[in-house]
Amino acid sequence: MKPPPFAYAKPANLAEALALKSEHGDDGAFLAGGQSLIATLNMRLSAPEILIDVNGIAELSGIEKQGNILRIGAMTRHRDIENSAEIAAHAPLIAAAITQVGHPAIRNRGTIGGSIAFADPAAEMPACLLALDGVIEIAGADGRRKVAAGDFFKGIYETDLGAGDILTAMEIPVQSDGWRNGFDEIGRRHGDYAMAGLAARLRIDGGKIAEARLVYFAVGGTPVLAVAAGEKLIGNGLTPDAIEAAAKALDSDLDPFDDLHCSAAMKRHLAGVLTSRVLGAMGDVENG
Ligand SMILES: Cc1cc2nc3c(=O)[nH]c(=O)nc-3n(C[C@H](O)[C@H](O)[C@H](O)COP(=O)(O)OP(=O)(O)OC[C@H]3O[C@@H](n4cnc5c(N)ncnc54)[C@H](O)[C@@H]3O)c2cc1C
Image (cartoon, rainbow, N blue to C red; front, side, top):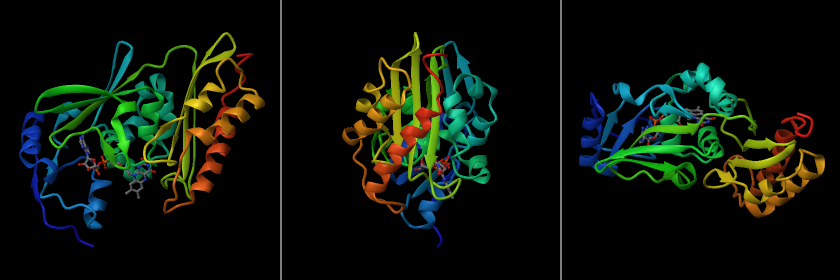
């Protein structure tokens, strides 16, 4: 199918982009990598009157370590994240997950900001950002503000972004000593959106788990921080008993619904499988 007609503008800087967005509100859509937006246009799922192409705004791209924070510009392509030494060194969870985002052709054009703004509940980057306790920077008519990932994702394709806002960057804490990461997902084929996925972070102290951030995706309207499952791990090693208790606790953490790919019951089952698989692969905590 062809997209509905739309106007096109390519602002040279952020101020121009914001002026256009504030003029058109919800009738204007930012064009980032176009890997989701153009598909929704072609399927007539959205019909903005103007596309505001932000590919020419250099300040929106790049990865920079600023003290204990890693700042990732919204227009940074998935491929640049995949190839980044800074990401590999300071955000290994993202390094592990990024190769699961679609296929190379999609990662060449798609951007992390587009993925976070689009907020597909089955997407990898929103789950990683939540597991990392990241912060999203937003610019709008009233200036810039920062929103914790835990407050940003509101529902299926729904976020804290207002009609006049642009997502400018993500900030994540640089990985510090004691943290370990695990990531896996189950999909029909490599590169497909997940039927269920898990981005896991554990902080180990004195041979025991001191903090656990288990974030499941494709099992609800947003990525889900599984608090009850995480609590079952605190104070323990990664023993089979602790992992089984965490998997059982998911019953109260998750409330999946059927989607095009599988039933809610299947998603619950897959979340349990991923818990055993991901935590089981995170190593011997008690003996280093
Ligand atoms: C076949 C296929 C398979 C895919 N598989 C996966 C997958 O497995 N996992 C996954 O996570 N993704 C997958 N994707 C989507 C891909 O990751 C996209 O890159 C991503 O969802 C959107 O990024 P984009 O830069 O292309 O954004 P666009 O498509 O340009 O924009 C998406 C939406 O976000 C808005 N937007 C973009 N940037 C901003 C910004 N800075 N501020 C405010 N709003 C903004 C746009 O207006 C639009 O509404 C797949 C896509 C395809 C076509």
